[in-house]
Length: 358
Length: 116
Image (cartoon, rainbow over the protein chains, first blue to last red):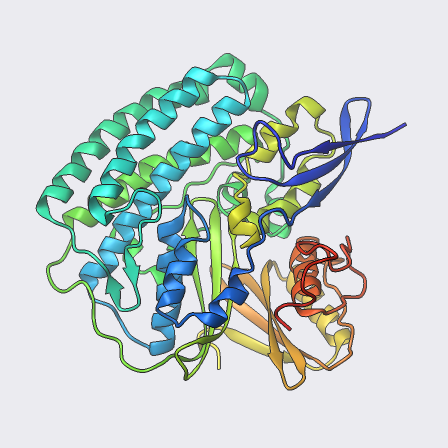
């Protein structure tokens, strides 16, 4: 006989509200029904009242964790409508801030994840290290949470020598700290007992389920938007997608840890190759046509669709966030999992509900 | 006109849509998302698929009053976006794997089809 148990919308491991109705048989999940709608803000409708420049601010506020990458994706989509190429220095600054965004997001997730399986000291360590990244982002952008760096036509602020030195110093420290926490996440007996072999998705299943980001790459799929033609700059920085083959919670964790090193490498390379010059160009007129822009956010691929009609307002803005792509995979991952492991499995998709519902 | 580097196919009927989507799945395409636009009293649906980091789109015009077929039977992950458009545009998808009946985000007291 099965019992239905509600998981969420308020739950100790969930930073944001989402509800799963779990059908349980003998302590094992046999069915899942996700429910959304707790933080839907109607932002795609809200832009009707904002011009295309003001919409940048709306997009930056979709999420408090990957704010910079939302802004970058939106502005790049609108730049496609204008068919303009922004200055190279601005492109590099976007990469630096975007990758810093990924480092702090992954450290945030690792902390939440550690807390989720009851390792509180590890949670404190991850969040302590993350603070240094936020300090640098605050120094560079002037803001701690909503970084607000990208503008249509470039970036809002240049990088100074002092900010670059501060960033490099922070990266050295964080890289060494990540090595410390990596030992625990990857080698600790208890952590492995909780994660290895849990909620495994095969390569094909993860691909066909439309998953994105570390959830997709943790199952052996080398899919990363930073390899696409829209992001040629990453080729110059020596980017390689991080892939793990096992498809379980342990593999998804290892992807995020290794991506921290990859992002640190990318930031260092971007700083070493940072060209001189302007950081923005003036944009004249109003956008027309349609464009799709994709970016690899910390949780995976975000898709922006913009349609302009020659007025100051966009006719349509559509945003598909990575958690939106990853939630259906819970329908495939959770059946067969013990009730006690459900929080761990849900956390491994790094759910961001504010992004998902917009 | 969308970015001309993205291959776009116009779909004429819901039968053709399902057949084409099945073909894309067997060709190894990943379902990315779907865009819904108001167009000529009806709606334009742009289905976005990805393979080898390249996008492929299908564009299907939904006539006024038409109930488009759900592709969630082919790609389960399509169920969320199709439910979203039931909420926001007032569309009705036939054959949805899980049908929230217009209440994925919205409550009975919310504005009806706010993007329609």
